[in-house]
Length: 391
Image 1 (cartoon, rainbow, N blue to C red):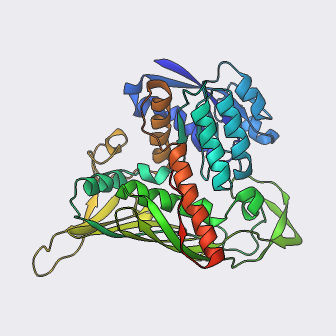
Image 2: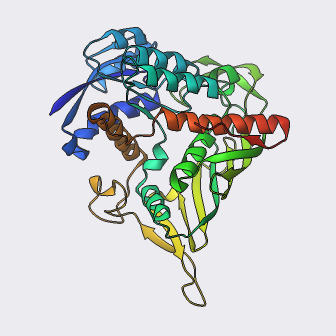
Image 3: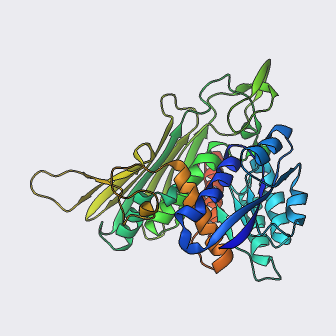
């Protein structure tokens, strides 16, 4: 097997998931002939550095990205840092000629996302480098199959799409005021955090791009307590009595037009009490419709044709033949997990980096979603329809 040196930046929840995804890759994608070698993880928090070596098997840990990029044993880099560091880290990786896998949103704005995309394209004297962006929901076997059905015309002409990503991870007014709630550090709040997934799913599954949008947004919890101790991911923080303002969006709803004339509705919330992770996609066409929900990730519903005087949806369990399902389970009815989706993403990234394939969602996809989010922000501010810049 070919050994590929892995460097990783920021060992929060997502960084830890990247590390474990690399470790699982040889058993799930043996035909790639790749064995990831966890060389170095960078994180400024001492406890995370210790976890990198003792829990996840990195050969060593460092406080900053500089040591990762300077190491000749590092062939590719995972960037799992807070949003406001994405642009600087990704541009530095590109200038070092290191292919990178970065979480979304790529930057805190479309302008930063374009800088990342352009830097990756200009790397290695204009030859470019392989990139991947963390749009993990598109890797669900059911989503892969729905995309294939639509491309084959089995739903007829697509007329409209609904996509929502509704969560409650920020529903408590006493959850800490982290960087996620600062526009300069977190970007556009739930728009970049969750709705970017929706923009990617709609465009990826239909094969059409969003060309114009109109939207509204709001902040429902205007103040949160300032943390007195840092945590990992969404947890482990301690808070004091002092509170500060929330500076980006809690909720957003948008209408959009797709390039072939279909219509889309999108909604996201981070403060919807009762919804842990209600992420769903529905696609309607002239010959049928289909729908999928992350809460029941391993199945989808489809209705094609009239089916007699009474008709409705048929529930289909994900099975071999649907995306990469067979790499993880032998038959329908055995669930895959969120972690499995990231393993698929890791495999696509390393295939692109070593074989020159184009399997992973790239910085072009990240930029396309960022442009949708930017247009949605402009529309919510201006109360008008806004054009989405084409990538």
